[in-house]
Length: 313
Image (cartoon, rainbow, N blue to C red):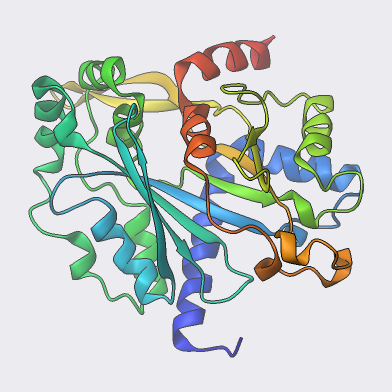
């Protein structure tokens, strides 16, 4: 792809997201170090990033329709929409302008489907955003976009509000604290060397190195057509500051972000191609509702409590 102003901006934004994500999520560098130590890769840049994901709140003027403007401007194409009835979520994924870039997955909470009390708590924060903040950005300014994606949109929540939301929607609680913070990035395992190029084999490598996997729905989530296989680590707990009144704060440990792993198998019409000839367009694209539904739970207490207790022993 020829270098253009848009691609240069996209490079800045993606690199900024990944840099800050690696600083905050210790599992990222742990995974990379283990891969280098085992000779799977020579450096972090050898990893193909399958996709990155954001979580949002579906209230005007925020949600998917706001955040997607950044990536549509930078050359992404809106693709399929997904609905997660039990979790009260919707999502879209976006195809990148060129193969080196990751897919984008943006989900949003259907806030109107929550209880009145949960809606009141959420809107007490999101009402601070009077107009679509993306409209105020220069979307050709990579530094400005990067700063926006790491700048709080509303005040820090109180611990009481966080707990109220968590009791009804763990997704809501995660977003009210983390805002647009990157939820996860995804290692494309199918492009790794033989012996590590399936999710099954890669999971064995992860567990051998002490990583705890999300086991909701099984450690390997498999699409109905059998062509998309996914797994993920369990989010580590992070120290988070909450408002405590009169200018004071209190610190609690909450779920941070995690790392995902994806195996995209060749589409039937390309199944006979030699491995070295397989390209992204030859493999299963998009996402799978049932898989994603369970991956969301990588930040849920049912997964994190046991995993983080294990990390501390």
